[in-house]
Image (tube, rainbow, N blue to C red; front, side, top):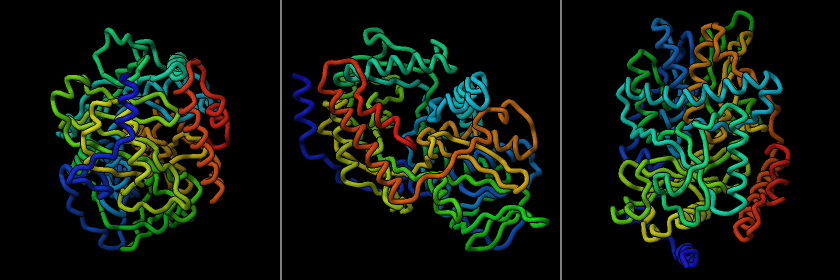
Length: 482
């Protein structure tokens, strides 16, 4: 009977708030208003380190460099404003999840090195929480862990297999495990047949985290130049230092760090390095207390499902549900951002997912919808590196797990710039290389095929009683670049 109600709820028109907005960067910035813009680069300049991109990666790199070496002259140049990209639009998932291939990293560096990387990511969650506290960054941080739910037999089998896999690659039983629904704090997800829990996760308000981090970086003496589009990054050439060419002047530095993630393809010579992939989100109006009594979710855990086309969610500090997924993951050409506006189809898909998980909120109006662009390498594995000869460094390719991974990248870039050999610089993602993506429209066509296979697999698994993953999903997983 409840399943029939869920289906009926999903077929209703989407209720929208009188304050509904689509885009405007993100709901997270709407809460406090868009930040006042910092001044652009005033002209040609010289620094020890120039960071391109004022998102999490660039700001963390600048933060740790300046913390460690206060006399270092560091600047950050940004096309828009700090946090304009994915750092201010993501789902607020600070977790130890890792998007790359454990086997690929182990193949080049050995299994113990890959396990060390996974353990480092777990520690990174606590590092971000600690820095936020130390710097007085009010980002609605709650370390409630992460709950992953399965809603059919195939998902349950896949979830258990994934836990078994992770426990072979650096997770111990206390780090992730199946939970007994009768003994776990309740989250009333409709149709859930199993769930897993990991303590290594925290909810954050991402825009507050990135704007607070930018203020902390400035307080250390780092200069942030906004409204400064970069047209080219030039390597060291003979006696000429590396340089960053912008519309307002050229910055020369001993080291230039590229931290542009999903916007990397807009830079000269980088078009096929990382594929821009769009992830969309919606957020409800605040949900009444009587509905929360039915839903539970008192621990403020991060929440996601086990579908192939999965969704992720958080309960916000003011009792909304924010839910996201790859509703329109790849646009042909993939360079236009549109201030975070997302497609009506993506809004509809996310609302169906929301009401499928929580039928009780079918009447809760949607207040905001938006999207952000991620940077996805062809092997989906993030990387960090510094080329000593050219003086250029970079980090990214997080493929939707960047809130924590960017912090680890920032600390690693610090050690690389300072010429240190540390446990961080020996992690297997340092220096990881992968060939570029195919040209358009081939990569767009491939993305559509994979997306269609996964969505069809999800539908088939939801209609069958068998506990096995659809063969269509297996086919999609084996396709090149996925």
